Image (tube, rainbow, N blue to C red; front, side, top):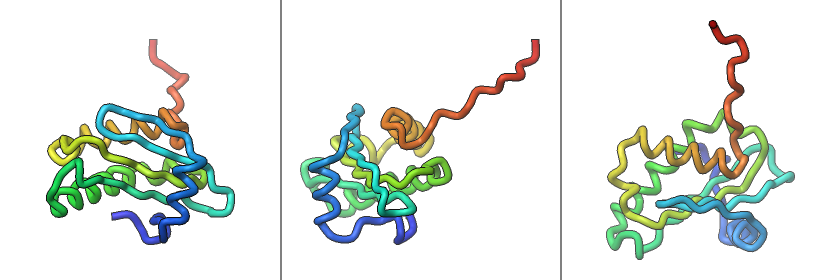
Length: 125
């Protein structure tokens, strides 16, 4: 689970991201994000609709897994962003952890929230 300082508090802050943020959509999830100069760290919300799965237990499991996947990339998020990760498919609950982290990393790179690692310039020939 991510730390409390990285969570949204109240619906008004989410509303701002929905109105002013940019969206990057993937096959199973979408990320809506906006830079936040007022904060020193990022904030993250994971939204899983009842349309994805009827069971609250299953939706909460999806939410926890995505929070954990983003937490692994926390050191790479250098600038403060407000991020809303929306889930479209219940397949996220059954993905292996490695694949889920790869999916999240790819979308975070696509948004520009995390940078691609610099390639090693000293290669052996």
